[in-house]
Length: 276
Ligand code: KIV
Image (cartoon, rainbow, N blue to C red; front, top):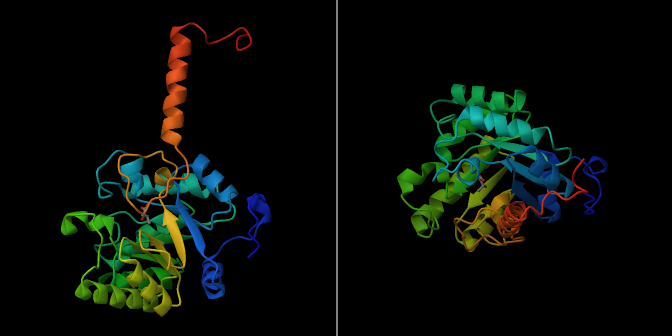
């Protein structure tokens, strides 16, 4: 894939589920970020990022909730629509929110269909392993690509009780490997593995044909995903070790807001040039 940064996204080859698979085969790592709105999604796409996830992390970084549990299907559809309309090249994946796919495969398919048809995403992501495979199969059979999500699965936070590293014990690591294989067999085109030991994620990536996109899962995965608001230094409430800060946007914004306040109070804004 020709990936020269700075080339307008319209001139670059569209990313598909197939091209992600061939990137893995060629050893080219996949770069993925989250987006929840039109402006951010457009910039991420322009930068050449391969996959944009409309994550249910919108619940924490945008909506101000403590977990991803409360975000609704309607809200995810809204955000996914904003993102899809901005993106030309990247593959757009929409998270299915908590309880939109757990009840039964029919309901899951209906909601995945709304994501594809109403919000324009090209794939959906859902959390879980072996137990979710019949649902994955049903959605894939209907023609909607599915991305899996294993390891730390934030929608189950109240079951785990903690956001600590998952699968450090042999039993859980073995289950994760079984889950990963089952998801591949069920037809996922890729999967996210979140916050597990690097050795385990590497083992899974080496074992499977589908790409493993890691977050807090070390450098042996086939790609990496971060929450944009974290890597931009915009969401600063938590600072997990796996996040690399590429900018300090919150500080820049605070500085700008403070300067505006100062200028208005000092009657220094607007100037004559800024007036009619
Ligand atoms: O919702 C999200 O942002 C995610 C990423 C952490 C992979 O699922």
